[in-house]
Length: 601
Image 1 (cartoon, helix red, strand yellow):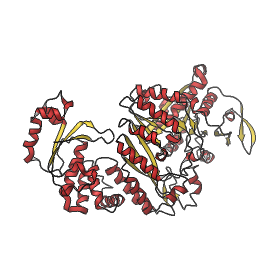
Image 2 (cartoon, one colour; image 1 turned 180 degrees about the horizontal axis):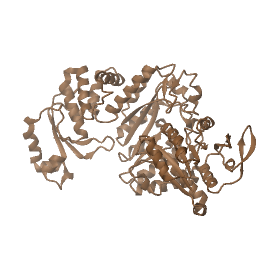
Image 3 (cartoon, helix red, strand yellow; image 1 turned 45 degrees about the vertical axis):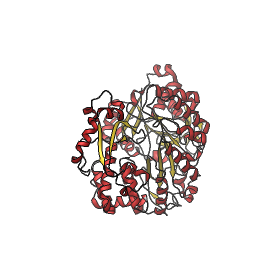
Image 4 (cartoon, helix red, strand yellow; image 1 turned 180 degrees about the vertical axis):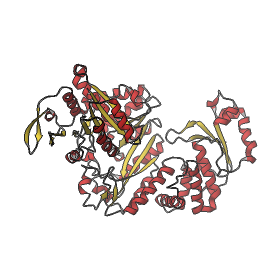
C-alpha cells in the first residue's frame, strides 16, 4: 500500500519539513514489523507552485498512490484544490486527505465544498498521520463523534482523533488531539540527499507565548521546547556535513532566554566556518549576555529576522504586540555596529490604526536602523486568527482567495495599498539587493525622508513604464542615475562615481558600464599598479600563486575624483574632490553584504 505525502512549495530552494516529519514519526511509532509486514510504502512528492497543474497531476498519476495527502498553506491552496479535483478523475476511488494551517480552520466548510476530498487532518499531524496510516494498512472498527453528538459506527476512522471526514454522504468530526511533546518527534534529516541545494528548516520549539492578533500562534500560547541534548546532536549533524543554511522555524526563538543562549553558545563553539543559522527573534528581549555573544559571532554565522511590524504605539497595542521599541532600536543598533550579524527587519502594511502617513513614519524609523534586509509585507487575514474575527470591526476587506491579503480598511485605502506595493518593489530592487548602498546614502539626503525617496522612485518607474517592462539588473543603475539627475542634476558626476563604485563592489564587470567615466588617461597609472609586483604582493598577499597579469583579471582598479567609499558616513562628498585609486579584491567579500574588499592605493 503506497501512501503519498504531497508538498507544493513556493520555490525550489524551499522544502516542506512537515511531510518529512509525518513520515519519520509514523515509521518510528509503528515500527518495522508493521511497516514491512503490511507492505507499507510512504513516499514523498515535492513540487512548486511555478509548475503547471497538469504536470503535477501527470506525475501523481505516474506514482500510482493508493492514498494521497496534501500539505496545505496559503501559497499553495489554489494549486492543491485544482490538482485534487482532477486527481480523483484519473485515479478513481483514491482517498484524498488534506492537512496544514490553511485547512485546519473552517475544515467542515472546506470539506463540504471539496467533494474530491475524503478528510482533513487538523492541527499538528504527526500522531494523526501515524494512526491514519495504520488504518489504511489494516483498519479497525471504531467510534466517531458527529451527527448531532450521536455515536456512530464506521470503518475505523472514528478512532482517530483530530480529523474531520466524509462517510456515506455525511461529514463527521472526531475529538481534538492534544499537541505532541516536541522531544517525542524523531529527527527527519538523517538523509540529506533530498535536500541538496535547498534550505533546511529546523524546529527546536513549537508554540509562542505572545498573542499577536494577525498570527495563528495567538490561539495557543503554550511553548514546548525540544530536549537540549537532542537539539545539540541534531545541529551537530548539520555542522558535520557543512550544511549551507539551517533556518529555525521557532515562532519567537528567544522567548526562552536560557534555551536560546545555550543554542547560540553551541553553534559558536562548533562553528565550521560555513553553516549559517537563521532565527526569528524579539530583539527587545535580548539582554546583555545575548548581545555580547551575538556580537562576537563569526560574521555570517547568524542572521536574525526581527518583526518590528509597526512603530505606531496604537497599532502595536491593538494587535497585542507589546514591543519595547527603544530597547529594540538599541539592540539592533548594537548588533549592526558589531558587523557580525545579518539583520532582517519586517514591517506589515494594513494593520489597524496605521494609515499611509503613519506607515511612512514606521518605515523611516526602521530604515534608520540600517538592516541588511527591510521586508515590507502586507497584512494577511488568516483564518482562525484574532484578526480574522475582528476584520469586520476594522472595516477590513481582503482578497477572497489566498493569501487573503488586505485590500483596504478604515485607515488605509486600496489606492494607498497599491502605491505601497510599488514602494515595496523599489525597496526590493534598490535596497534589499545591497547593490546601491553608497548611492542611496547620498541620494536620500535630497528628499524629505527615505520613504518619500522610494515613493518618488516608484513614481518615476511608473512614468517610464518600468513596472511593465522591468529593466535588467545592469540597466537599473542607469535608471537610478537618471532619477538622481532628475532631482539633483547638479551632482551628476558624483552620482556616476557612486554608481561605479557600487557596481564594482559587487561584480568584476567584463564590460565597462556606460555611466562610468573614461579611464583612458589613467591607463598608465593602472598598469603601474599591477607592474609593481612587490607592492602588489604586499597589498594582495593571498594571490601568491598568481602572476600580476592574472591578478589584474581577478581584481579591478578604479580611479575616483570623489571619496565615494565614505558615502555611508554621511559626509559632503561633493565638497571634497580628492582623486584616489581603489583596488577591489573579489577573493575577499563581506559575508553579510557580499561586497568585495576595498584597498585604497
